[in-house]
Length: 632
Image (cartoon, rainbow, N blue to C red; front, side):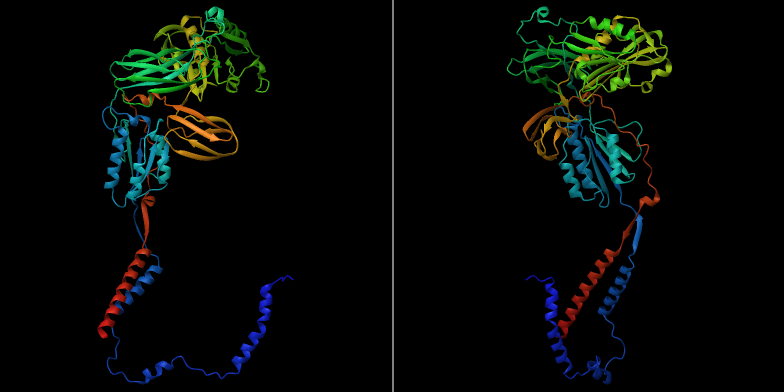
């Protein structure tokens, strides 16, 4: 048997007991006693002593408690100035690690910040922000000295570049308004124009440094493409050619030794001397058929930064730039016949280049890309086609929209880029320049990258060639018309230097770039970082990307079905330049000054009144107990 409502059954069974209790109560005699009966005798007795109210300390204490309770119910507040808020930006970029026979700039900045925290006023609040990568260390302004010291002591410099202006904007967002003061601890020089509320403490000094600033796996472009023409054995592996770029960031000559550690082969070493501020590209010939990581190291007597002295490049047996015996696929797409004729004659001069013409009006899609391999270099004058090209490297030959005119110009080059190799500075070249409105890079459709070649003419500096590289994708933009410009040696050099740079490959990942580990099945993924930390992430399945690459070294990802390792390097010429630093701080134009309403603060007094009332009650209890002891 099942009961629908057991509680209702229990109530029903209790009805007889309730009726019996009611009958029992009504049968008894009830007597009403007034509540003032205990006080009748006192009211009839005449007073024998005082006839007025007895006032003592207990009375006054009780009256004070009554007044404090009434005041607390009113919830009074005090209006005054808010606590002083200081935004502290500490530079954690890679250059802060630089040192020569003494403490680093980061160590001195960290000690200075700990001293500032120990000397701060009790009501002063601080917001801590690290600049590289930009990370707010506090979610809100803190005044607790113990918490602030703990956050600073756990800080360490990273292996990426930083930006103080971006850190300032993030810090203002945490504060919620313009801070009362900004303290910047960095190795950069103070800015020329800074607000009076901004204090910049610079711990940097001019230190000599030699760094690896680039590396390309590339080979001579215009060489025979067959083994019989190169003289190599038919079954032998073509040798790889690694171009390592090093720079001397100092005001004195630096002798150095560059070594390449090759798997299962003898190390390759080069020695040379770099002039002050000299950048040199060193070709390193590697044995053919090697596969695996190649470790490149630079050793010198005086070097302030160690993180930029090593580079690990991964080599594979197959690849577009694996050796001189492989061809370079090039796709030429243009609606103008003159472009195909001029560019085609240049491409025919190189036996390694295998090129063909593609219809620019009907480009292949990724599904039907048989005529356009994924690693082909695109040469086109169509910006839309270049933007949608799936290749990791491409070249855009963009002609002027107006009628160009031939002008005698002087070419100004960026000697640090491979595209301007073998060019003489300020060389006179007849160039087909675009009209003046087209001289601005921002006004050109499809133009992107940093200028590496300019034309100086009639007090104008016009960019001619742009180069960009983002996550392994390289692009060269020609802002001159090669069909209208007379053929010359400098023009040919720029074209083939650009093609060689596009045909090369970097084959390494730098800090700040995301790592792609391929397909990983759904589940928990374990990530081992170079600094020893271990992270766990839930992965829904598919391509796994990891973006927190702020340390150089090995990253290991363990997830179904396998474990994958990737190596991250540090290549950052700006951070490696410890001799001449430049400020990245700038005032925020959108920052508004703090108004009087924002500067004032309301301090509630309720908790202070309750604390005072509790103290009075304790004193009253003590006096009352003391009085009782005296009476006994």
